[in-house]
Amino acid sequence: MSSPSGRAQRTLCWLLALGSLLWWLPVATGDEPPVLFPASELQSAPSSEGRLVRSLLGVESGRLDEALREAAELIEDQPDFKLAHLIYGDVLTALAGRPTRFAHAAPAGVASGMRSEARARLRGYLEAPPVGAVPDQLLRLPADVEQVILIDLEAFRLYVLAHEDGGLSRVGDYYASIGMGGTDKRREGDEKTPVGVYTVTAYLPDERLADLYGIGAFPISYPNNWDLFQGRTGSGIWIHGTEWSTYSRPPLSSRGCVTLANEHFVDLRRRVEVGKTPVVVAREIRWVMPGEVEERRLELLAAVEQWRQDWESLDTDRYLRHYAEDFRSADMEREEFFAHKRRVNSQKRFIRVELGEVGAYEYPGEDDLFMVEFRQVYDSSNYSSLDTKQQFWRRQADGWEIVHEGNVD
Image (spheres, rainbow, N blue to C red):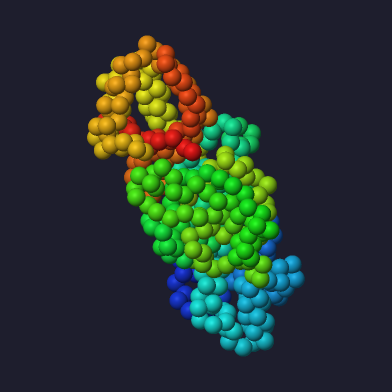
């Protein structure tokens, strides 16, 4: 798992050690305040967030005039950015030589939300993924899928990776709000954001939505097969914009959805293919170099290929050995599933199975669980079908086994 540089980690500890609302101002000691990032490292940031962070860093280093200019330019561009207004007011107070308190004019609850948002945005630069790194959870992106969305719930970030130059490149990086109940959705109404692997299922433009959803929304496929297998309930989990009266929300502010600033949702909209773009939602996205996922990827895909070959062999015992003791399909317990497969296979003279557009993921929030999704072309002596299937594989000390599988509607 990747970690911040020593400098960034020390600075993060410095920031979080301050318990008051003054957390983002320089420490009143004889030590020179730490420098978080050279300005050049912020130039690739989305313009509004880049200016916000540069303003915070200006205060941190005592360059109050620069901090005020950045905040003022940000307010001019985004007059509804409430956090920018509060920072601007505090910088003015500091320049006047009076004691300053972050969000001094805001109610306590609002101030807490703004402070959390500022921390989350700054953390996005303190712990930015290394150049060339890929998510540890992403083992294989289907060849016909151009982009993947990754949501780091603890960091309040949404990333977009795209196929470029034979690999995956990070082409989007945005602050995001999540459910006010936190993570790991279990039931309807818990106001939590789910953890798992999903797909964008639709696009809803703003004219079809209430103001709450801003400029648009992407519903995702919660609950998926694994959620249903686990007995999780609820629906209506979307990635959407922000109401028009404000630029952004505090980190924990939705009823379970993932919320972006409207300008960032517009950027995301250009990259999403409805029905194809995967959405990996994890408590933490672990960033590693591409070679570090290769061994698990090859092992998992080899297990899937052996399962396919054993199915074609018509040796039903060998085929069924791939299924775990606690396996259950979408609609059958293990014993019923086994009896069904023995009955069906006994009537076949041949079976041919082709797998295409294979995606593979280490499943977020679970230990040694992996999801494989593929297009399955099945042909036999008396029946043929074309389906999209999901399988959930568990890695054991002595090999791999399927704990659940089902078709995708």
